[in-house]
Figure: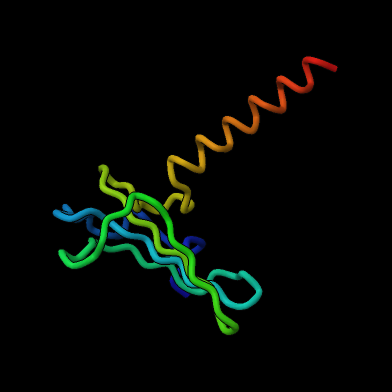
Length: 100
């Protein structure tokens, strides 16, 4: 299987991508990751800087694009927006707890 569990970051070459990078995660109907692909964006691909999900009866997929150094490495597929949202939610919970 080609997923992050079997990914050895030191065993691959790092490529410079002119148009940005992408990570594509393919999951089965139960949400188990079947495949993870990382590559450079092609000139005709749109660099959105976020993730787009696709779902049907057979599978689901997530394609994330980015354009900063090593942005599609073997780390989990999270965007900066995901971290910002997580931080804001944690700050809100702390505010609520401080009022109690």
